[in-house]
Image (tube, rainbow, N blue to C red; front, side, top):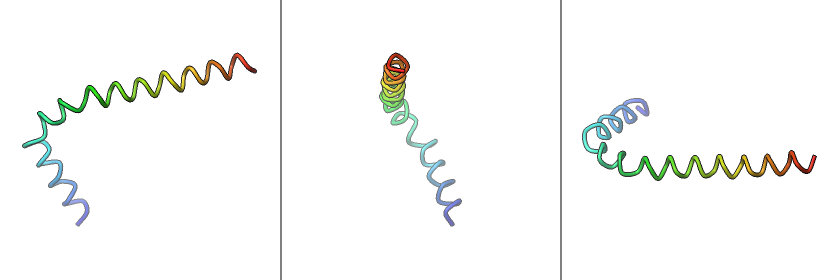
Length: 50
């Protein structure tokens, strides 16, 4: 049941959500890169401390 729901959702995404996905993707990418840079800064500080 859950698998068919996921497949249906994916079909809906491919049908209607391409514009939505292309609208959201830059923000998602920015968020991921920001979190990675923040964790990198924290790691650098930790390395400097040790």
